[in-house]
Image 1: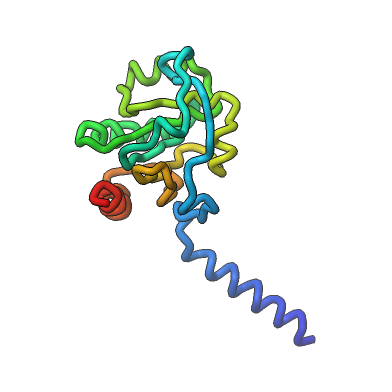
Image 2: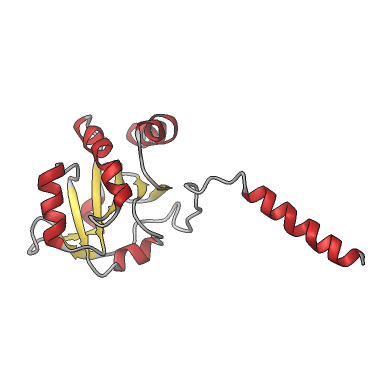
Length: 171
């Protein structure tokens, strides 16, 4: 008789704890590790291959986005403002049509210094991407230092990410 009650209480404690977890703070096994090796075409120029080495040299946000992603459209104006303020942002256009991506960037402006075409989702898979938008913060050596899942809005940038980015710039 006590066993069912004990099992119920254990499950209840785990569910109760889950109510207070932040879904944007999904753990990543890649924190502290270099970006996965890749060689993929640019969204702007199919003849240009972008590799993981191209993302080294400056701290950056690596933003996974797509035209089919409604939340990405919400996030995009904030990324444009951040880029205008000097934040280095690289894009990973995830499982998307390249013509649609090019049209999107012309229409909504392009905050990305480099924009990787990940049409098959291979880089996204290597990064452990659940969907879009997701953003990785990488240091100047290309090591992933933070992962944020969800929309980066002004509040998220100000309260969670700006200080982390500044630390990487100051290193």
